Length: 129
Image (tube, rainbow, N blue to C red):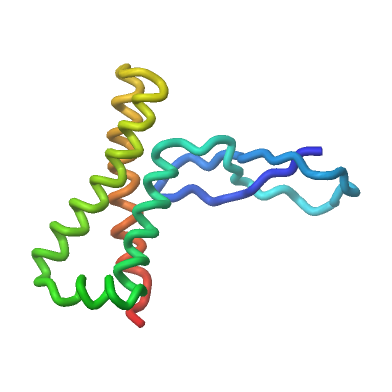
């Protein structure tokens, strides 16, 4: 029997299903959630990594102290650069796996957009410790 992990889309990403094989269980009468992860896209991976980066500079003591010591402009550019590196690395990895096509280039740009959006939303809505 297959079950799935469910997730609401991040930064406007389409929600899909990640199927896993599990032992058979009795059928549940509960309604199924509307969003499921079918595949891990480069945009979803980049958004998750960028949100993790934002949490890192917000909660890890050494990283938080280093990040807080910077000026506002330095914080913005540092976070942009780190997030772009994460997103572009994932996008280029996808291109290496699938080949350089127009579709792969669009996925790379969407991964960059999803990562930057996810990073900023996470940083703005997480309370300072």
